Length: 318
Image (cartoon, rainbow, N blue to C red; front, side, top):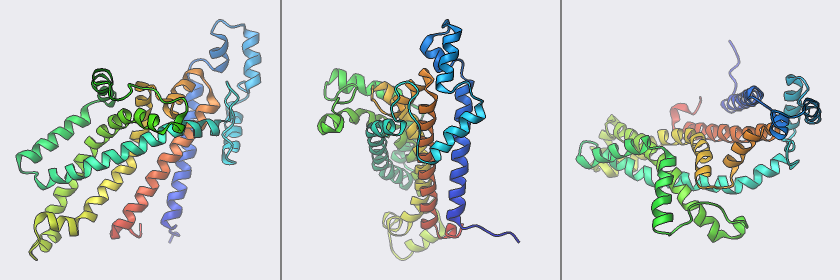
């Protein structure tokens, strides 16, 4: 009979293996793209000897396995390297850009929760009535609308026509100008939050309908509790299970969405930096950035799984 590893150890091993596979995949995909940093700097018609010298300077002439293992060895020690273009420390660059991206993702998540949980629960409670059906239909439409389109509409109406908030950009002083920083993140947060709320509403609705139809909640109602009170007192935990699970998955969606939204609103965040670095073939910086993004997604997903295991006694020993 095999030894069963503790759940925490299994999750840690899964996170490490997935992160390693992701970094290797990104490394190979970057090398599969046409051109490299030497071509990006000197052009496709650059002098062959100059191209070769530049590749040797950046270590691009070494075998791929050597390049990857060299980067991985430094990354495991917490050193993500330096930008091949600017020479700046990659970890410091990511930390600086995260001052824009992390507040954007956090604000979007809180907005999505604040909107989706009450509306989804209402849609579930009134699932057989016209207003519940209307909420469900609206969430399906919202989930189908591309976030960048929502952003363009908000820019057109709120920023251009009403002139209430800036259409894009971020203060040069960053969070040293808190009012300006907050104002610049309102529309992007609304854009990302609205898209995620539309998706989350559907899960909250489905969970609410399932809980309301369960036998144990009918037993609770037999004691004299109304549907809403019984759901609030005895069903909130059961409704929270799928919501927490979906939130863990939505983190990756929010990060991917922030890449697009930062382009739409001209925000100097991690997503905009990543797009630029891919175009410039700054391999070291792209690898470090993607590794950090994947690590954050995996850690949040693992935390969501752990939270679900604690909320659901049936998974407590998983």
